[in-house]
Amino acid sequence: MEYFLAVSFIALFAFIAVDRPIVYIRFKDGEVTKTKGKVPHGFLHDCAEICKRTPFTGTVKVYRNRFKPAKLVLSKGIDSKVQQRIRNVFPHKSFK
Image (tube, rainbow, N blue to C red; front, side, top):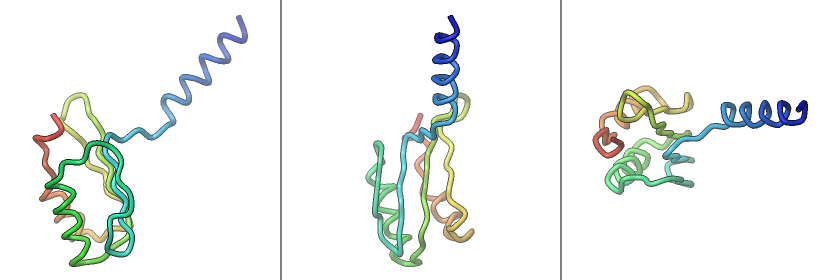
């Protein structure tokens, strides 16, 4: 019984603690270095264009939300003006 409780506690902790975005894009010095998930082609193209014009290093993550279509999370290493440009091109309707 104790083993079952210990294993279930560890499984619950791992389920809560693991970061699981539905889309992950990593940028480094003006280039897209890594993508995970089903990224809309237009969004990836627009992000790459923004990154070429103003090179930056950081990550863009999209999380599924129960009440809203999707939640966009940008790393703090990205300038606030660039963050706003990425938010402007984010396709909210693609993640419903």
